[in-house]
Image (cartoon, rainbow, N blue to C red; front, top):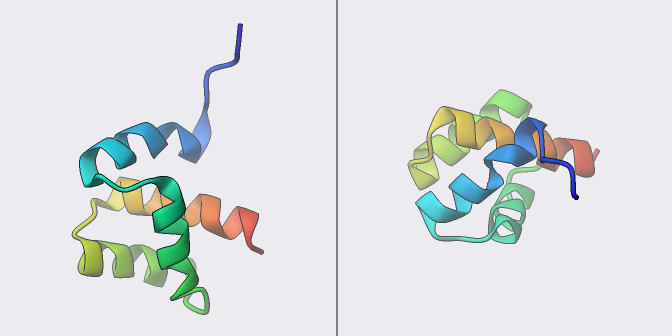
Amino acid sequence: MSEKVQGPKSYFPSIEKKYGKPITFWMKELRKVKELKHLEQVNWLKKEHEMGHGHANALVAVFRAENS
């Protein structure tokens, strides 16, 4: 039996379903603004992709953890 995904990655299935793009797409998008601070990246996703705050924050948290 596999463990349930917790933390920011637990949002990934609903992000893919709601916005119709795989997580790899969002990680590539965030590379475009990698020089921005965390909240600036969140706000960029909200503005450019009309993403909700929780989904954007989860993506940015994982992106920054994996690309620091």
